[in-house]
Image (tube, rainbow, N blue to C red; front, side):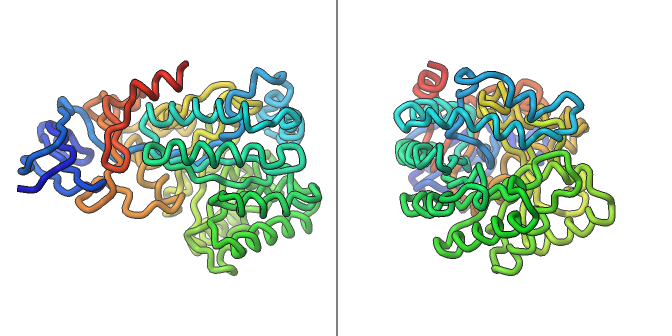
Length: 413
């Protein structure tokens, strides 16, 4: 009889009949058995109570250095970013106004906010987060240092991929390239850019080139916020996809936002769909944080890789957020009008398995042999999970139960 570290009993599984119940055996951090009855002694057992057990959640996009900074500034940045006519034509103005908070950046207070947000991540079942830290002449390396410190503190509970993010540009911000390089030397995991914020097309292209040069130098993945405004003339998504193909960075390159896609003419959009597939490049959409969003349904229909992200938690761009990806999927269901039960299943994938694929997590699925990153929901099916978007009954990271009481105290304290 196999010795198990953890045995989950009385579980419902997605894609199976509602009357069926399963047991899931976990040992050495992996799922070792899924069956109606799993034999073997377990050091610990939990009863799912007929609730749904799935892969844990993955947050592919969070500006973690900025969480809970809204109270440090006014609402002007948010007003410009969202803009009254919902066109997002003032998005760059919003970003420039939001820069002011970085004059106060210091690792000592950033880390406290980061701990709170990551504790909520654990509480709500996000075991993996791709987290952006601004790197520029105002933020310096304070955010990166805080995120790297928190990454080590939460190791084994929440896996944090730290993105060295050139939020204020590279060409328009002299010295930023060197700071990104220093951030990567400190231990950041991902090279992050925002090419569309540059002033000219030539500078946008140079920004993309510099980001990929740094990615090659450190053999690191790329995340870039592209075309995050209501301007159909923004084309940095195309440049990013082409550079991904040229550098052989297929599957290691992730585009965030791409809001201008909502305004692209049909023939050009088809070209982008094809380029994204060739580059094996995913799109992170955050429809809850801006009036425009990438055309998620069309991307899915064309077979492109898509996921959802939290984006912000109580900062200059978005007042709400609690690192609850079920809540993000619930909001997306309304904003994208994905309200049928088959569409709910798709949304669930966009915050679990598809999100994992977007940030390079391998074998992230509820299957024998896969890493045991799981949630036992307080709901019997996907519909009820989205309806209430409550914290899971249990969260399992790396095969071990997360201390949710501790996370609740830290995240809500």
